[in-house]
Image (cartoon, rainbow, N blue to C red; front, side, top):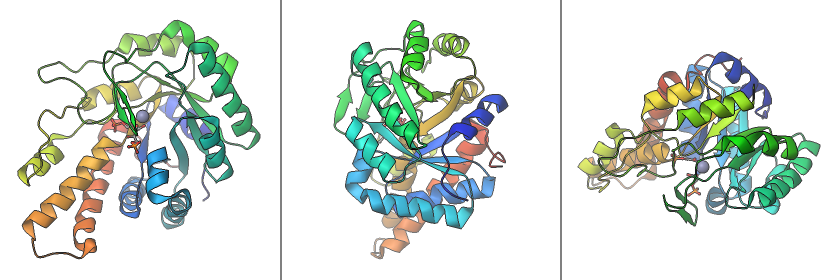
Length: 312
Ligand code: G3H
Ligand code: 13P
Ligand code: ZN
C-alpha cells in the first residue's frame, strides 16, 4: 500500500454515511497510536500536519513516520496539510510527498479566497494532489491565529456552489458552530451546531465532501485524569459525539481531531509521572500516552466516525 489521496475515501464515505477521521500528528507516538487503532479497526485514515507540526518535527521526519505507518499497517492513509496559509506552504507539501492539502483562505474576502484557492488547485491537480478549501470562519486558536467568537462566522450556503465551481476544490470545510481548541462553548452554554446550514449546503452540493474542523469532543475521561494529576482544565467543553455522528451521516466526510489527541496524550504522561515519580526514561511515560491515543482513536472510529471495517 502507498499513500493515497482522499478522492476514493470520500466517495465511499459519502455513499456509506460515515466520515474519515483526520488526526493531527506531531511525533512518532501519536502516529503510532492513531495508526495502530486504525489497523485494529481496519479503518481508512487521514494523518494531517499543520505548519506548527512541520516547524516542530520537520517535514521530512513526519513524511517518513507516515510512510513507516503504511508499511506497518498496510492501510490506505492520506497525508494532508492542515490549514495551509499560503501557496508556498501548499507547494512545499505537494512537492514533498503529501497527497492532500488545505488552503485556508477563510480570513480573506470571497474573491481573494477564490483566487488563492484556485491557484493552489491548479498546482495540486497537476501533481495528483487533492485540495480542501474553506468558507466561513471558525472561532478558536490554530498556530498563532486566535479568532474570537465575535469574529467567527457561519458559512453562507448561497456562496458554496460558486466557490466550488470557480476554484475546483475537492472538498470544503465549513463553519456551523464547531471551533478549535478545548474550550468550544462557554460554561453553561448549550452546545449547538447549525445542522440547517449543513443540510442546505448538502442540497446545493450533491455528492460533495464537506469537512468539519474543530470537531474534538473533549472527552471528560481524559480531562478528569489531567485535573486529577495536577492539571487545570476547568471548563473544557467539546462537541457532543452524537452531533458529530449525525454530521457524519450527512454530507460530512472528514472530521478533524487534534485537541482530543492532545488531551489523551497529556493524560497518559501526567498520570504515569505522578504515579511513578522516580521514572525518567521517556519510554516509560510515552508508552501510556501512546496507549491513550490509541484507545481514543478506536473509540472515535467505532462510535463517532462509523468507519470501522471500511479500509477496503
Ligand atoms: O486546527 C489546528 C490544529 O489543531 C493544529 O494545531 O497549529 O497548534 O499544530 P497547531
Ligand atoms: P480540534 O481543536 O477540535 O481538535 O480541531 C482540530 C482541527 O480542526 C485541525 O484542523
Ligand atoms: Zn482546523
